[in-house]
Image (cartoon, rainbow, N blue to C red; front, side, top):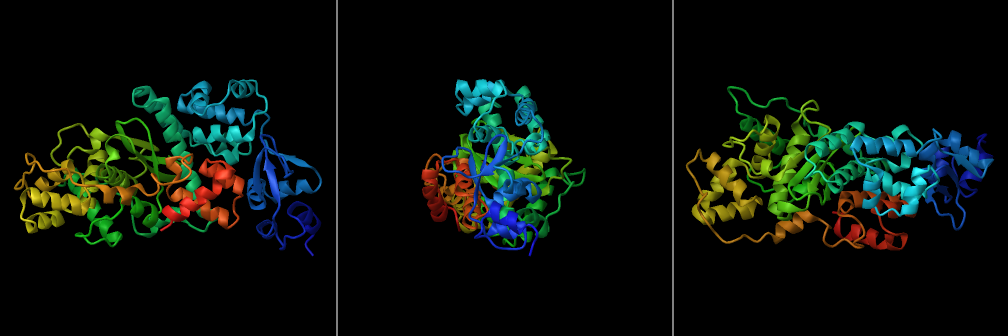
Amino acid sequence: MNVDTPKFDIVFGNESSGESPEERAATSRALFVRSQHQLSIYREGATGRAINAEEALRLVGWEQLQGLADYSAIALLIRSDEPYRSIDNQLRNLGLSLKEVTRRIRWSNELIRRFELRRQVPFRELERLARAIGLESDKLGVTVNAGADVATGVRLRTYRNSDPKRFTVSTVLGLAETAWTIQKQFDLGKLIGQQDERIVRDLGFKPSAEYGSPLTKTYQEGYRLARQARQLLQIPSDQPIASVKELIEVTLRIPVIQLEIHSELAGATVSSDSYRGIAINLKGDNSNPLARRMTMAHELGHLLWDPDQRLNRLVVDKYDSIIRDAVTSTSPLDAVERRANAFAIEFLAPGDAILSLFEDAGGGATGLKRIISTFGVSRTAIVNHLMNASHNRIDMRQHEFPQIPTDEWEAAESLAVPLFDPQSVPVSRRGRFSQYVLEAYENKSISSDTAASLYQCQQSELERALNSTRNYVIT
């Protein structure tokens, strides 16, 4: 008999079984309560975060968790001034004040006062604050700096200092929380057996430091990488990409986080720890799904092909840079952005394929409409690309034609954003993230309380969120 069996029975319950802490936790029905300073066995009426046995074991390990066999609670803090120090450090990284952030998440004056005086704050409120600034709430007080990606935070502060008009408090917090969401999506993936971080490498993608030379223009490198990406993904050159979002999230297992930030910003590649994901702004030009597809493809070009030394921890792209023609533009776009633009349009609508389709449709406005409808690209982007692909033979810049319906493209790219219930679940958590929450909850890796907190809804709303995920997200 295992020498820890008596302690196993006390901590995990007599109904649990197994010879190791992991086996016991997996079969346990016990609940625990996480507060700011300690972890205890659940008692009716407890107000902290209710977590299950597997979560408790992951949080502190058996060596510490077994203390609950002898004591009613065990201490969590690694330093006496936590989690205040980690939160203050991250606020400095971001260049934001406590009041700016707490106003955004609607903390009361009393909560702010308690935090400033270093008095106990309800863990659920600390959790909301941590996630808003890009900290891993599970690690509050348990790990130095609570899993903060310092470089990403500092990069956001640099953006804010150089461009405060666009990088408002709301925008900085939106991108900081995106970093947390990306990290959490990968963590949830591991809990459900999805090793998402390996997919891109396993498919054969390797970063390329080729950005053009006197013999090869930058845009030609972008085109080459687009063709290579289609080959690696086994997408024929004449086949449209039905959903860019699904390709990125389902096939490549790269998080695509939809959010609403300043209307002049299109999207970003965001790093958290060793993981990267894509942020897509739903405001501004991206309200049109054809523009959104171009933005996602542009960010994908960065993420797949840019070496780490050329791609900062956070790269935010403005609309006016994404719509520029990578071939003819005389703007001061650097090679990294120019290559990503070329990649995006050639990936979405290969030049040879659009030329053939244009001519088969009889050319003119009819041919152009056929390309747009088939490949799901905006008029501005495809007019430039068609001109470049035909070596300036086909110039449609002066042609006018009626607006082309985009409802089908909207349905393909928006996923569950418009339909998700309850509406309290942020748009940033209504994609693949929500599916991973559902699957982690169903396999008992997280509690119902944790699942609701990850959806950012009330426990009374959890079943609706789970049903929305089943109905609109899972493919």
